[in-house]
Structures are given as C-alpha cells and as structure tokens.
Length: 250
Image 1: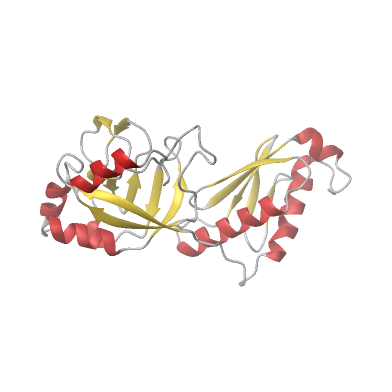
Image 2: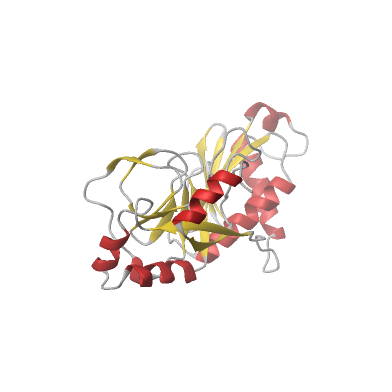
C-alpha cells in the first residue's frame, strides 16, 4: 500500500487524481453500503473541509473533489500532502457516522403509465417471465426502490430493490431513441430515462414527470439514497398530467 492509499475500518481510500480521492466501501452492491455512503455524503456536505468542492456517490464508492491549493494551505488540515490531509479529515469524520446515523430517505411517488405506446416491451417481458402484463405491473408497483446511482445521462436513475422475478437481460439490439421518462428493466435493476437518448433497456412504461431540468434547482428530481415507489396511471391520466402541470416536479 503506497502513500496515496489508506485502509480504515469503514472504507478503503485512494487518490483518484491530484484533486480527488475515492472512498471504496466494499466490492458488493448491498443496501447497507448505499445507506452508509449516503449518510457519509450528507455528513460531509454538512461538515465540509477547507477546499471541498463536490462529491459523487456511486454503487459502492464516494468520490470527493477538492481544490488542492486551498487544501495544502489550510491551517485546519494536518499532513504533508493533499492526500494525507484530506484522507485524515475523512477518516476522522467517519467517527461521527455510527448506527444512529442514517440517510433520511425521501419517499417519492413516481406515476407510470405502463404498456402501449408508453411501454412497448411490457407484454414481451411479461411473457418471458410467464405472467400477464397486469401481474408484472402489480409486482413492479408493490416493490420499494432505492436510488443507487445517478448517471449515464444527467438525471438518469438506477434503482435497486426490483423483485428478482422481473430480472431481464438487456435488449439484444438497443433502440436508437428512448423517450425521456421511460421506465425500463435491465438485469436486476429498474431505471428511468431522464432525456431522449439511445438505450438498450426493456421499456415497460413512462412517467410524465421530468427527471432532469437544467433550469430547476436542483436540476435532478431524484438523488442517490432516495426511496421511490411506482404508481400505475392510465393513458388519460398521463395526458391530463402533462396538460395541467407546468412545473416538472409538481
């Protein structure tokens, strides 16, 4: 282990670049890792060190970005170089993350119109799993999901917690364009497309909510750690929603 790597009881930390470090909480994708990453990220934003700029949570890691000139000159940080100063601060911060610290999940209901033009793959996925479309919708809506990661495009939401019975490999041929708001299945995950983009997930429905709007604060509707529940709506309700709600997050 060199000078730019450090193992603590909570995570393994290593230098990502001269202005960033990554905290690795474990190799496996587990709910407790997500809970701890989210809680630590919230604590870091509440108690930033001198020079802290941003953090990016992922499945099992948290990358922390900083201004090296501010870090190296800070009288509040101890160490010879930036990695030592930042890692020492982050390691001490973990002492405040105990069993009583938990991310405050924000339950968000996501309306989804399943099937038809909004979910062209619904019937095929249902048939693949030996169930009716109605059974698939019910199963998909009864689960409680957690946002594991925002990525691929701004606001694209990767959700964990999907029932194992719905696990489905990606489409053999990606679509050239998937409409924003489309709800898809790929592997053991459900995802929501935030923008009109190509994609290889099986599309089972679409939400009228806008997942990303650069003119809003914050621009993304969901964030890592949020709890999500899907609510089935009719095509008429979908159209009425778009007609009556001007604000994307209403």
